[in-house]
Picture 1: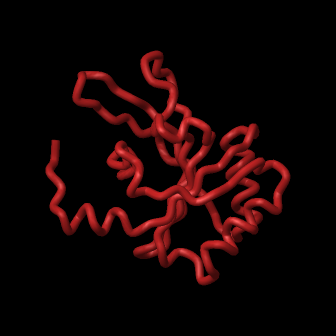
Picture 2: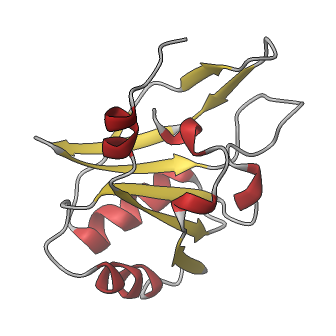
Length: 141
């Protein structure tokens, strides 16, 4: 496994993380987010991550990239993993995670939350303190 320098890890943590509760499918939520936030998301190949105990997890996500900025919609529910159901177990109450670089939007972070909450397909949305998540390394996809 590749070692990450402290500087690299610090840069990786310069993002916001929002937990989303929604019963809609990933593609439907992506469409809602595109319309609400005026972004364009692209479906990426499912990411497979090898864990230390010789197990592999597979997750689905969509991304929007623009130079040094990014926005990711990550499904917190893992695909085809009988031993683990959520990417971030401590956030199992969230169906999806939105991860975006601090400089992605011009408006304030609270405006983003209010915009998300304005759509009735998003039942709940709130920021997550990434410093409190032990498995945050799984978000470095």
